[in-house]
Image (cartoon, rainbow, N blue to C red):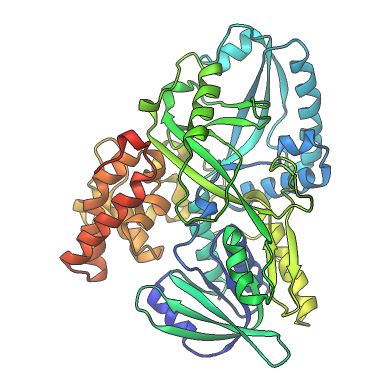
Length: 527
């Protein structure tokens, strides 16, 4: 996965069957689907893969317990099937996680047990395990840090937990292995149209060199998530909102706040949303909120009222009460919800189902959806594009397609932090053995090494400190202060590998500190 090689491939001036705009979950899924069917495919990402929403999720591959309560059975069935396929196709990244719902009223245990038995049933052969009713004593045994006062019972069920941006990188690698041309930091600035107003390509600008590319293609897919409206502005003569961004935030804490291996799920918070506390990379992630925001931002910042809401809700249910000073990192993500039909519709009511829009110009746009269903969304988009553009009918091949790095039965590997690399793990160990100095840790409190940085640069198209520490190695999301402390080592290694000077290093360190401060609560930001 070499950026210069991919740019050379792009320069060969061919007409692509598919031009995919956007390197998040949906765009990468589309590239994998199209390329695996044998279509000539290129994907252009304006910044870095999964830089937006796709690296800022709750880290769950799930069927959507909440959608079950809303009666949206078709979405739940689809998501449960896709959850099972994610686990099979990327076993190194998707874990089976046990979730516990604590009940503080007599009827909750029975209500959720019945509902979750239906959840198990809908998963069919791809079920991750059976849900069960728990006594008060068993609930406290499995999740000892839960508030015992008023506790009546618990319910245990299974869902998936995964590393989102690592999954995105592996999708990019898979697309390239299937023949696609995939490039980050290549921003689409214009849509090209013929005299019939049909899109025939795009103009894109290399954010590194400034070079401009004219790229011709038969089908152009707009998979830009929360930035959908910006691409539609280039396409439409009359402006219309196609998506509304909704912000969700997550706070990251030390694992002592939720002892044991189980995740916690609070099905009804004071605002009616679900709150999760999920073990992830030896930390606990708590979230999420649902706040409509006016504009889509590459670096969304958590609002104070959102932080207070997550803290107060967590304090209500945990015996060790988390405070602001305990927050290791806070990250905000934007959900690209399909614009509501009704004016006064709340974010909880807006469908999470995906929607495909075919413009008069034949631009194909995807709105809505969620990480878990990325593969099915991609299949639907390519099927639609084949019809719209009268392309050769080729069957989808992704249902049982292994994602790069896939490793079965890797539960025993989860003790070693390198498990997320799957089959690439041995190559990283080889780098460490060939150059022992690369065994050096990025930070004394974490096991990440310089060898992983080298791997990210050489094999995963990482070009900045942020690419490495936010989305290849997840340190920024786990502990923002530790990430800032590690930035100097990473910047020097990047400069050495990519041939940059001291001035570039200083600029990188300043840029990364600005971004990383957004992951810290305001009173703890580093000047």
